Amino acid sequence: MITRRPVGICFGLWILLFYLFLYITIIVLVLSSFSSSSSGRLGDWSLRWYQELFDSPEIWQALKNSLVVAFSSVMLSLLMGMALVVTSMRTYFDKVAFLFYGGLAVPEIVMAVGLLSSFYFFSVPLGLTTLIAGHTLIGLGYVVPMLHARASELDYRLTEASLDLGATQTQTFFNVTLPLLWPAMVGAALLVFIISFDDFLVAFFCAGATEQTLPLYIFSLIRMGSAPVINALSTLLLLVSSLLVILFSSLRVRKLGVMK
Amino acid sequence: MDVKKVFFEQLSFFISVPALIWQFFFLYFPLAFIVYLSFVSSDSADAGFTLAHYASFLSWPYIAIVARSFGLAFVNATVSLCLAYPVAYFLALHMKRWKHIFLFLMILPFWTSLLVQVYAWFFVLEPYGVVNTVLLSIGIISEPLQLLNSIYAVFLGMVYCYVPFMVVPLYSSLENLDARLLEASADLGASAVETFRRITLPLSLPGIRTGFFLVFIPSFGEFVIPALLGGGRRMYVGTLISHYFLVLQDSFTGSAFTVLVGVILLLSVFLTYYLLRISIMFLSGGMSE
Image (cartoon, rainbow over all chains, first blue to last red; front, side):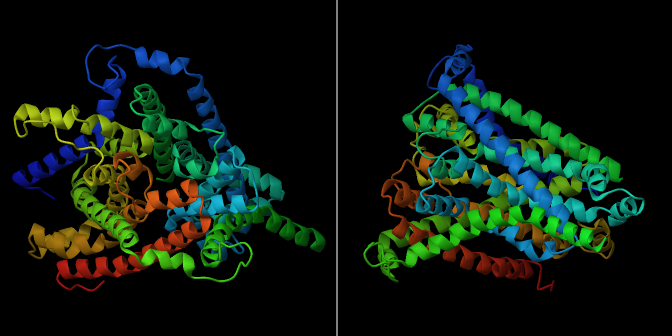
């Protein structure tokens, strides 16, 4: 297909502007994180905000909480999702699959409000535990469809062959099923981790007043007014999440390579 | 042998069940509970059925809030669609060499914190931020514009945060398009515009739908962007819900409003589903699916 020149230039310009729009905020953030002025104006380059960032105990406490919540929800949703998909795949999975797509149609705020009222009703004290419960729920909504999609691509005869050749159920699971599901598990785990780590809304409703996660802390800083420490923090977070994206996409590429 | 088989079947059932229990306990029970709360009297002496919580929403301020959020979500989804379609189209059908890099750059902001992205707009929109500096130096305006704390800032923030959710489904539906159909159409004498209108556009309808809902549904109840960029002067659906639950601590009226919003959302999703199909059919000249 040949694109005529003026049309091609229009497309190119459109895409350029689109990406500029997507990246303008990121460029501004990264640049002002190195500026010593507190209003975000550029000039006077310094590492002052990074210094302040590393000296702030609240940020490290919030980061620790966020990591604890993210790791726990990844582990819980992965374990439960895995157990459901692997054991019910050949029996009743199709009958209950719709339950896991419901979460996508419900806006997050409705979910958060529902959780808050139920916790309140059963007088469950709000804290990191309730937050983990909420994030595990969100995680299941991603883990189950992703694992199921991968599992239904697999050749069931492989497990049958393994059982026929005398392997036990457990051996078959660890030597055949698990290695085949591995790429989907890593992908789902990374996705759930990032979602949980970045989630503000469910944390805002379900974490209570005493525990702070990183997004909650950032929100309170923004609410209080200008807080240039956030620029430094965001730049570092951006670096970490781009590393994660690279990891994720290289895994995807390798998986595709195997399938071809 | 038989006992062992039965045992394994029972065991695998018990292993599979926690995920379902979790889903019921933390998603479907809370949803049902909200519906229950919205119909029950807040007076603890008689917890009877009542519609009183809903009655208050028939007044103008509430209708205005719902209409504002609905309009914002709808315009956001439509504008995102218009912005994203050319990008997804070009990436999926015409770009060869740099495709992976462009896709990577598309997903990257997707994975950064929403709060941080919203916060960055402060620097762009503030009185001496990027936009005002550029406009001032070109000479279009003589004094800085008040861009923050307005519905325009909220709208801009929403488009910015949600547009990648539009590109990804559009890209994957266009990517799966059978290129032979386009070649056949060109061979049979259709112009590029006609091929797009009659082949590409109708075949990308599933992607358009998915993208539209991925943008529309979360932006209808969006809380963070209006709370930060809207300046708190105007209420939106998301900010009002959180106001009921966290500030007023009135779960009854709050639940009623949440249920109402959920119903409106559901109805508009159904309506948009057919609306999108009809408008695409109209654009493509009445071709049936």
